[in-house]
Image (cartoon, rainbow, N blue to C red; front, side, top):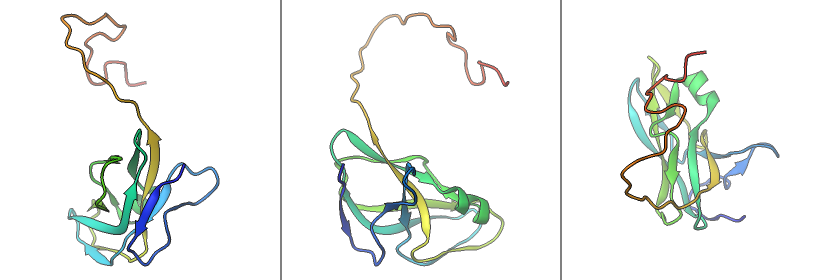
Length: 142
């Protein structure tokens, strides 16, 4: 599959770190400070054309979370096939210290995923299931 990309950054196109990687690394297209509990939108300089029937899922990078306490809001984020604006990543600093997002730093992973279209049907009754109407943690803690 090919994803068409306009790259207005000074960095390489997104790529997989290894042959078996599920996600491509996206890089920051700026350098910015992020204070504790602050939220910022980080531009990537990338504009995508994703084939219809697919989405790009934006997921946190484990290293950024462990080393700096920075993660992604609204995770996983979805980029729909018909979106043509710049891909910007919503980061939050959950640590107690200021941090710097460096230009070119890998800030997230992008996973391309196929999806199905569903049609909702209004009905009067649902089939029973083993779980029934059990709520959060209903299936147990072990």
